[in-house]
Length: 166
Image 1: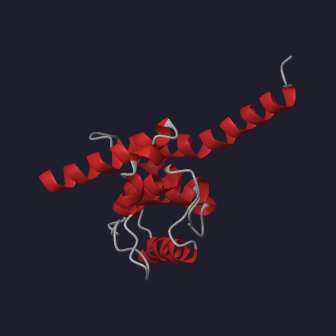
Image 2: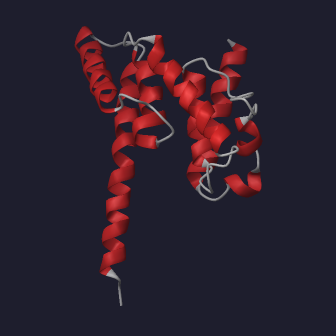
């Protein structure tokens, strides 16, 4: 017999997780389009302003954290440095408080590293305890708990390789 309560929770969870990812994908596509009309740049700005209004205090969190920081940083919107600096400071504080342990979801480390990279912040020597996010991301036995951890790690490594080549 099918447990309808679990099916409902799974559907809700998927919907909750897809909203910030969808917002990020749309913003990322618009921001990285090599040729776009002024109408598109207006849509990018409107989307970035909306995301900024929803994630006023970015922290470690897919919805109000990494996806917002990544999308806004790539949008071209003029955002005060304090917005990104406050995210960087919160990440450092949380990693210090939790002794670098963000739980069993290794997608957290990948998302944080991608977000930090997108704002030009270091992904190693973070916080007073000098955490290196790569030490978590490169632990293959732990990262391979799901596809998103591996995908996040690979995206980050591609971003870093592209920076070194250009």
